[in-house]
Amino acid sequence: MERLNQKTKMTASIIACIALVVLLVLSYTNTGTTSMLRSVLQLGSIYALAAASMNLLNGFTGLFSLGHAGFMAIGAYTYAVLTIPVNKKANVYYLYGVADSLANVALPNWLGLIIGGIAAAIIAALIGAAVLRLKSDYFAIATLGLAEIVRICVASSPMARITNGSLGLKNIPGFTNIGFIPAYFVPFIVVAICLVIMFLLINCSYGRAFKAIREDEIAAEAMGINLARHKQMSFIISSFFAGIAGALLAMFLGAIQSTTFPLMLTYNILLIVVIGGMGSLSGSIISAFLVIAAKEWWLRFLDVEQYIGDWQVPLLRTGFRMVVFSVILMVVVLFWRQGIMGQKEFSWDGVYNFFRRLKTKFRGKNTKAAAEGGNANE
Amino acid sequence: MLKIENVHVYYGGIHALRGINMDVEDGAIISLIGANGAGKSTTLKSIMSLVNKTEGTITFNGKDITKMGTRDIVKEGIVLCPEGRRVFPDLTVAENLIMGSYLRKDKEGIKKDTEWVYELFPRMKEREWQLAGTLSGGEQQMLAVGRALMAKPKLLMLDEPSLGLAPLVIKDIFSIIKQIRESGVNVLLIEQNAKAALEISDFAYVMETGVVTMSGKGKDLLNDERVQKAYLGE
Image 1 (cartoon, rainbow over the protein chains, first blue to last red):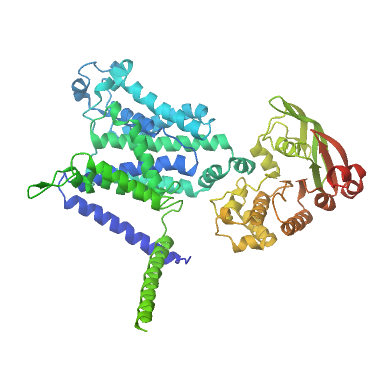
Image 2: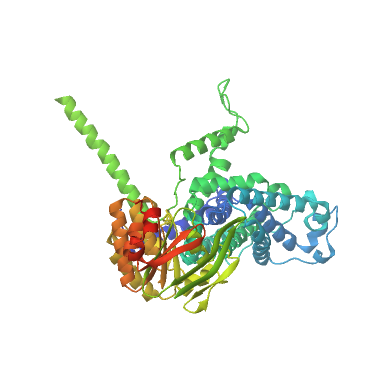
């Protein structure tokens, strides 16, 4: 494996960042507000954050949790309950009425977002002390149960004056302009900040400790790593970012119900994590955009009935895109057992070596073909 | 240096250690031999607080470490290199070594010790960027020992370093244990391979079903009739 020097890497990173920003700006200026590209990019970035936070727990610390939808629900509901404008509350809580203590509460959305994350983290801290004693499958089932409990709680009638029961919440304030930055860019900025924090975390000694726990708990403990404390920390941090992702989702959708956060949501995020590679944050980010774009956009044409003359193309009807999507997933998992990135993070060395391998492979084929051609001539 | 007095450990209803007494002196290789299930590994684990002791006291350099957590015991300078290598397979060799120095803050010292470990195990230097899981068994054992050394221990406890290794590799490992000893680190060694262990150790304990039945200088035990009968197959 060849390594590039530091200067080339820096230049490449700066160029890539500028290119990303330019592309984002282009996607803003050249499309209408209802464009598919815009919503796919925004939703993709929210899912990228959710997947990365799940990866922190499942991929890096090796704690297989299935409670992600629950923490996203906590974040989303906390955000929604705290930020719905006062004058719209009567309209939202038209059936049950709003709890007296909340009647005059409407926080600015950035504060609601942070509190949403903190609420998820607090619940994780309380639950974590108990469920983190469990191992592997049992931990997965306990967290799965937790997600269901959250979902049922928010839909239950005793909570109706806060969460509006099964009617859900609407009129949730969306993204707003920050100074001269248009609202469209807000989710990208928030997600980018969160991801940078996560990257810093996994590259410091805590990140290595998480990986050590994943690899071998006994050896990690013998090295002096406090297992309980690190597991707890990973669980809380992961839940915090899941809460933020949930709150962003609430901002994006504008209306949420308990059914917005079903078990399927956890599985969708798990799917993104597995496709991207367990233990690779950059993999999660790449696969989040790919999966969301494929599912919501690129495969849409499969849902529309098509006619060639009088002949109706078979199979093309509503829902068929999900069949094709599932088949693609199976193929991807068969060929990339470790996901797109495996456990590696994105690096310029990796990109450089990938293209070099591709080149030698291509050349190898050519020379082989030439050699065979030569043989045929003889 | 390390003093173990009347330590009892239970695994549920099983009385695994029935009152162990040991006295590890400074500047020595001490080995602990015995059959499977005699309680050798449990002794090390009870020193590290990886299992709960129901009775007894352990002192290290005059300090009572009986009730300390594993983390603090590592900070005191006792490091366990657990049985069966247990390197972190998906971390690189270099990362594995850094994990060994997890509790240390002195960057200079860590750098120096990394150099030292690479000097002891030149093969590790060659494989710095390789994933630990791709190393051979012997190399993994060397990495495990190197990783333990990175914690800068005063007492290094090795749990069966020869497990599952070829005789030639075992010879390497044992000569390195001697080297480690010469550099001023005390070694407490558990071995099935009684002959090899007794040959290099200054002092040795023989364990049977949770109690220490014999102790003495390594060479003396090597010539002891009972030891020969039980472990050396004479």
